[in-house]
Image 1 (cartoon, rainbow, N blue to C red):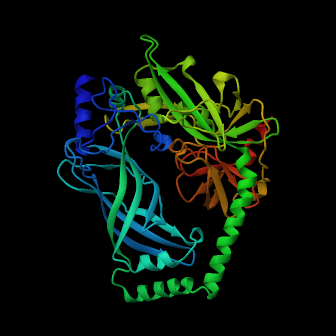
Image 2 (spheres, rainbow, N blue to C red):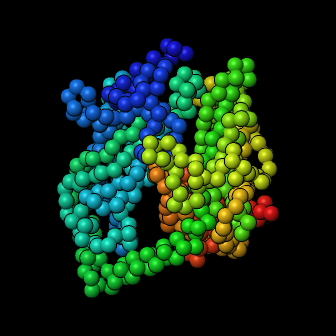
Length: 481
């Protein structure tokens, strides 16, 4: 274990990371900053890019933002591609995912999809991401179209925000480092070359016409955009008033224990729940409250090292909208939360356990295992009971509204532990019915599992489960007492 730890930490040196508060025995690994870390990465060990203690200069960013290029433009949004590379490292390793938060381009909000295609870093060469990052500027979110006009005529853009690089660990490395995940927060503040129209005069002409039309306040398109902007604000207000009182941010903590040594290691999961009855029954995804039944990495650790779920290591908490989640020192604030250890929250019922055999191969060691895992699907539901309080249940839609093709709103807590307060974030999504599930066009963000998928009228049509799929609400009706 000791030699393996040295090898792993040797890899991390490529970031020139200087942790502020090392964890004893972890050779410089530190606990994450709750104010920064996305909720799915909560509990991961973090290497933090900081200032050089000798020179006071900011250390070099390992990420290279090479260029931004045009992908598509219509009367609703501007789609862009962002090409990214990573510099050589001391030890080749796999990057699992790259998350982005609060990204802006020249001050304009930029949506950047989570990059979830694993890729290997090199000891000697700069490595390009396997595909460009997909980005978009949604016009209906802007108060003015002028910044977009200015952006398309620039040759460089200032991109700001925050990224998180998740490093893939083998099962042995997880044990050696006492963590399930290892992440590197990497601030984004780069001037990036813009290749808008790739020297295509016809493309530039067509795009310029759209831009000029939208920028003209008297044009039909601009008036329609303004109307859409107002309607979106009105709908957002209406949905806020309908949904927010019934939403809860969920935090599940559990521990794996060695029955021989009694040693424990804690893990956690976050998600969203919503009230479905006036007496405080809360609906969420089963994988939020029992994540070890769905996570192959956890199941592999349990099977490989004969670990068990510690009965005294489980805790489930729910924070209402607006409640304090983090205290001033960055620690979880359980005082306003309803928790199982305070008998203010309990699990009433979950979808039945129907584990299926799944072949699993550890991506680093290559070791294979046959695991028993819960499949994604109609049983991924859990009903909780809140104690006390005045509850505002959300209305469930009828079966005919599932997959109707109408725009839907996902109302959850993405990256919930990155914020001091429990603040939900609605996002407009497109969903299509495929078999018994609704598939979204994008992957769910950390913290959105269990969130309601709402119709424009505020009715729950489905529940967000995992990856990019949601389960029609009809499948859960029989679970709700």
